[in-house]
Amino acid sequence: RSLLQSAAGFGLVGLTPALQAAAPIKPGAKAALIVVDVQNCFVEGGTLPVKGGAEVVPVINALAPKFQNIVATQDWHTPGHASFASAHSGQKAFSSIRLNYGEQVLWPDHCVQGTDDAALHKDLQLPTAQLIIRKGFNKGVDSYSAFQEADRKTVTGLAGYLKARGIDTVFVTGLATDFCVAWTALDARKAGFKAYVIEDATRAIDLNGSLAKAWKQMQAQGVQRIQSSDIA
Ligand code: VGL
Ligand code: ZN
Image (tube, rainbow, N blue to C red; front, side):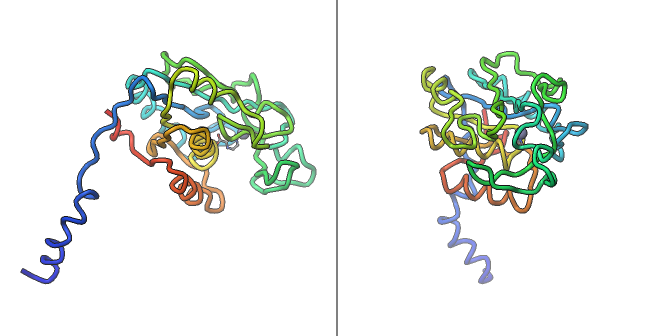
């Protein structure tokens, strides 16, 4: 036996949990799939396209039949919304400014209420979804999270809705991993839910390291990072 083989042999006991495939997760009556912002604006051809954004559609469509509870969200901005660079003179998209509630990334005009750009992706199949929650409709306040606006005070009502229906666990999917998905998962934890992010059912914007930062924050808050193949 080489030194390496012995080390591997002795190490096996300690390594076992990492080597074992985790048992599949079966979402029950107390779990909800949250499908975040799978809208035309966030896929190729939209106003704020996320690289590979449309690739989440078949993954989410395959997950949907495994859930008894499904909530979809739509980014739903007013024209001239405070999160648009165009609403601030001299500001460029993807830069950052301070608004009265804190730091705000400025985006191209996107997901304006009632436009085709803001519609859910046409191939998204969620016939059993029970609630569509719209967010970011207050002109002066952004809302990445499906639970709470960026002022960190105004709630959307989603936590109350889920709790009233006995739901204690959320599985977050959609766009974008590092903004609306991450903020939704983090606020789910804050509101006392068990939270998973299904990584291959998301795609990221990744602006100045935002994706790595988001995963780090999520891990620190107990959000579990899983793959769609982990769901039974
Ligand atoms: C989002 C930027 C601006 C998102 C929404 O859905 O992640 N990102 N508005
Ligand atoms: Zn937005």
